[in-house]
Length: 68
Image (cartoon, rainbow, N blue to C red):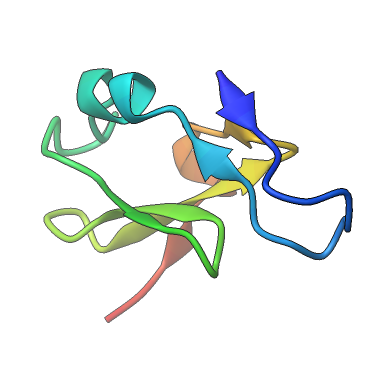
């Protein structure tokens, strides 16, 4: 599902594009965009950013960060 682009733990990981196509925001059911540097999936519609930890998207609203 994910692929390391480096052995360095500080280097952002890539998320499988097919996985990104299948995922939607669990709150708004809208599309998500991938922020590689922040390692988050962003729902502009819901104003939430879902973290990606160890290459795994955490799609829980309780874990999401709110933004303006």
